[in-house]
Structure formats: structure tokens, C-alpha cells
Image (tube, rainbow, N blue to C red; front, side, top):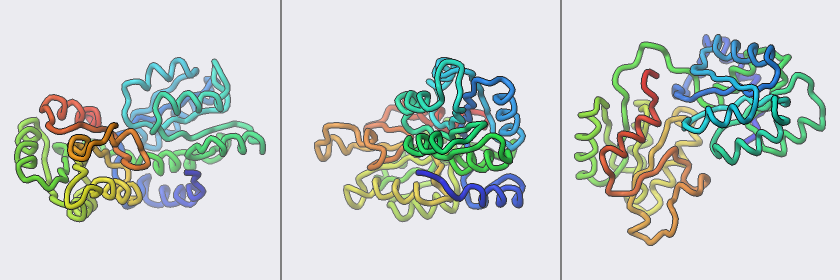
Length: 283
């Protein structure tokens, strides 16, 4: 979605000391892709000083691709000029490599043609790099959430949204023995309420609860809500077996915008591995 309100949010960021009130904290990696060493350093420094962590940089699409393969949640700052290709071409490659990555397109010199072509690619934000750096930090914050406050969080909290009480008991035992705190919700409505009030680090979400669409509705509502729209969601369901789906529901991000998906029954090690991926250690 093309964002037009970030300049207003930049003022909010400065007024609030660098965080957007009501947004969840981010565990995302920020990438700066820029072929010019001086401009790349300036952008990286501005983001780091603005509280974005971690921030990685690359001069080329080839270098960035190798860095991004193991990253789940990310925002990419793509300059108009990379060392190995134009930034507009890099956007196409990023879409194939990481379909859900939020892309902020930057350029030192704006032209109407360049902006129109970037708009056509549906990048998250278009930033002229001679502008106030607070605008860039605000755009990243809008894309992935404000940075996590260092050293203020205890054990990661996982919200389990499922109407199966036995599933809750099993998953709570697995997660709590691995050092996670857990919260239980047994319906779509209860899950949304608890997500908003508790701000968990991740959500485990069933699809079929009261109806066959509850999980889909939960996701759509969560992604519209600024309080929880950046919270990682791991779908866990037996919907393929129950209603005969021929493909995993997470293959359609418009239908089921989750950060990962596991079919039931779930193996403990796979579940813990997914949570380690979604909630980076030390964040």
C-alpha cells in the first residue's frame, strides 16, 4: 500500500521520543541497499541512531540476497542505484526472494518518471534521501513497528488462539518448558482482545474454531489494527485434512497473512524452531 501519512507520523515520532504510540515493538531486520558508499553509510547511521536494530547494508543485490535468505521479517531500503543493477530492477528480485518484505525506495534526485515507476511497483514508501532523516525512520517504523526497548523485556510471550483445550494444554507444556510465557484464548474475539491488551511476541493461530473462517478473520482484523499488525502470527491448523484443501492456506497472503504455517499435529521441535525464527533471540 502506498503510504502518504508518514510525514505526519514523523512529527509524532519526534514528539514521542522515537516510538509510535499504540504500535507493537519490532523484531525485524532493516536492510540498506545502496551502491554509493557515502550515501549507504549515511542511511545506515540515521536508522541506527533512530533505534532501528539490526541494520545491515549491501552495495549490490547479489550481496543483499545472500544476507536476506535466513531473515523472516524485514524492511528493505532500496536506493535507485545499486552496484550491480538499478534499484527498480532490484525491487522485482526482492519481491521474488521475500514476497512479504516491506520496501522503501530511495533516491538522491527525484524525477516524475522515477516516482511514477516506483509507484507502479507498489513500494511501501518513496523517500528522497536529501530529506529529513526522521522521515525515513518514521517510514521504517510504520512498515515494521518501533524498535524493541533494550533490556526491558523478560521471557517472550506467546498467545495461543485455538478452541481445542487439549491443544492448549499440550502446547503450553512445550512452550513453558522452553522458557516462554503463554496466554490462552479460545475464540477469535477473545484472541484479538488479549493480543491488544497483552502485546505478545508471537501468536499461534488455529483456523477452524467456531466457524471454518475464524482464523482468516482474525488475521485480517489483526493486520488492520495498528496495535498488533506487526505481531508475528504462526498459523497451526488441520484445515487441509478437515475440508480437503489442496494447498496450504498461507500460500495466499491476502487470505491468510501469517508469518509461518504448520499443519496439525505439530512436532515440538518444529514448533520451537518456528518460534525461534519469529522471535529472534536477544531482541
